[in-house]
Length: 207
Ligand code: 5GP
Image 1: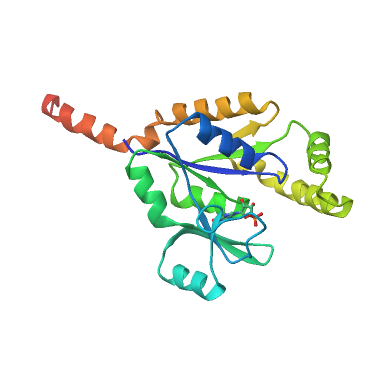
Image 2 (image 1 turned 180 degrees about the horizontal axis):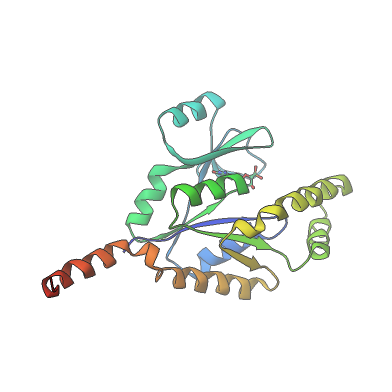
């Protein structure tokens, strides 16, 4: 059986990073896809861990070679999901997580309808603002920009398969895991089993 491809998006400040980190600590069936980006590394970010940092030329070359499942621009930079890693891990029956923005997420669902898409959100707009302000690292202007962007992104929430409300972290991580486990039983992800079943029933067919 193949693994499930999980596409995770959500508002900035919704806690996606923390959720994924905790999910991977708690359960061992997951592989996290590392994207390629043309933006500069931030402090503490490592090549091959957070991203593969590449020039625009190198990125464009990968596009030409059809090396991405999807790619998108986000705030003047390019981001893409490398195909080879994801395909290999899915074949090894690992569940692969992509943490990508809305445009890319919807594209993945188009080309790989068996993927499941999940949108992470805090319980309310007020709570989102509290979390963004509470980080203490952002100026009020940056918080206001992120809130305005969240308003726009909310328009795409209903295009995701599932909404995941991040209220209590542990509960949220466990819910996410259960959701993914249940997704293994979807008929769309089990075409091989269906075909095998049909094949083995052929002998009993009545003309
Ligand atoms: P950041 O620059 O803050 O790390 O990421 C900016 C946005 O790009 C985030 O919403 C992140 O989820 C998204 N992103 C990261 N990697 C990819 C990718 O490979 N494809 C797409 N479409 N979005 C990505």
